[in-house]
Image (cartoon, rainbow, N blue to C red; front, top):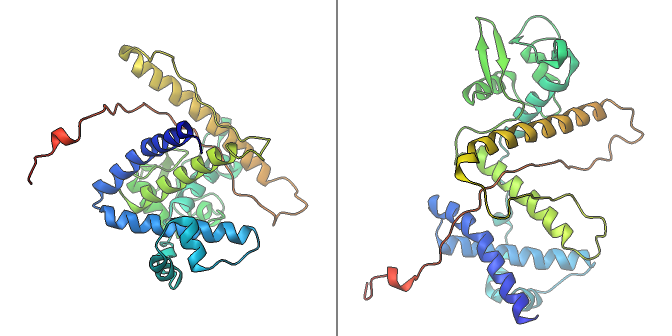
Length: 285
């Protein structure tokens, strides 16, 4: 590995990890806990790579390839407790409710505007039936209360509710729902970048960015923000409508499916000025 390549690689991952470690630090996750997560990931990837080649692999070989001490490898592979997945949140189900409300003609009025719905009654055109018709199951009362709490819907009169958003956004910044969304978004973006960096993949996935070469004057930030939100929402709505229409097509093999989607994100580059770490630490403490 050329020195320049390795230097850039390490710098790139330091740049990527800095905001991730900030989140862990805010949540009270110490370095030793993070280090244990990294050990497990290195061991898991080493084993998965061997599996892709149709091979089994020894603990000693895993240790050599990953750099994880053999005693830690043996400890990690002897129990899969660290691989347990937390119980999924209701984010997918809530998103499915909002998606159907905006795309199913049963729940749309003139010009495709989502109808205000009663919780029950009016068979076939109420909130309960809307939820029951979604592919991801959730109790209608739970969906109602969570969407109401997150202000994705609001009460309209005594009996009806009105939808305010096409997408679900968790109102709590460090909730299980937001962390699940964060993990999914980061995994999907990293997966796309990794796919595009793989030489054997000749047909790349879409990953585009646009930015002003010398930054944008601060007085235009508000106008820029409004413009991007409007255009991005229109793109997402168009894709959402296409996907809803695609679900209604006759398909020869509906069981063969691929999970995919489009994400649009807006960024403001963080300013992390280089600091003299030693000068910030009191000696002898």
